[in-house]
Image (cartoon, rainbow, N blue to C red):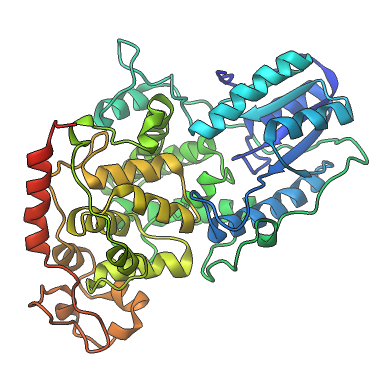
Length: 480
């Protein structure tokens, strides 16, 4: 089912449902605004999933952030007169049961790009049609939907640069403000807001950022007032405040992408130097990358399980649990890799440059399949986004759309020296190396040699494994 491009009055009824998904805010929420315009009463509902203890695509960190975001959303809705309803179960059955319970005449929702979400939209649309309910789906998560940025032949771009040019040339919709008033049906049953116990999950990492629309907007305001003007020069430095830190807010819809884009344009217009203006443009380009990967997932859902580039489907990958365990827990003996993996475990976040380094290390130095790393990231990242995560992993593995060529293999030692020359990032996340000379942190070692006595020796020789990767890709190219 294709989403509506913009919210508008469809008809005026007494009661409708707004189904919250990845749009946990009341500011510039396309479907919520449309529902409020179309009806006297809106029943906002969040349907909790039923899985327990573990899930391949999420974990305690993201669920803890979600719980806090839902608590904030609940309070925001109550402030304007609404009431957030929590239900749990099959999404389609639960929504239809609620509609029958309160006499709703329509269900409003914002579209999501992943295959499971689209499957639910299709199923809900068909079920609503059978029950005589209207179902209105809106474009909200991205500025441009997956079918808006296409080639002249009507096909999805397979390379980012022409996609970004087309994306940049399209008119951008203006954001709408914060919803100021809502009335929800009275005395509708609701579960308590979820906690990690809802899914039987252990405690989350201690370093997770504060969730909620207000916290997200505070982060956006700080970024736009200062560090966006240095983003172009500093975004690859993993230590310090060098990025926007808005990825988890966009992932859960705590911020409107239209609002963020407009604010970026305003920041660019206010830039005092050409370097500052270029820096803002670099960040806007990252927003286009986000939409490129979402559109790719929508048009090529098979990328969740398969290499995007079929030429490399025959490349053999190793199956080595011991190597994977050392990578997961930051015990590889490569300081920049281990620092990044410890950051992930302790904070639910990893800097983007670090993500590339550890992904290429797993696939090119350890020869382990990108799907293993992709799932580990999703289970630990607060900002775990299926489309961007898959795109990033396939880029690093050399199998994806617009990917790094298989022969472009990052050297973790030179990456470390280039982007963390003083060892600030390594020292922050690897306390056992805080007293080591920074220069030693980036020097390739002899076999069996370690950076420090209480730190493991490198588990592989990068030069040797690089040659092995080249051999595998070259020998198996096009053999699938």
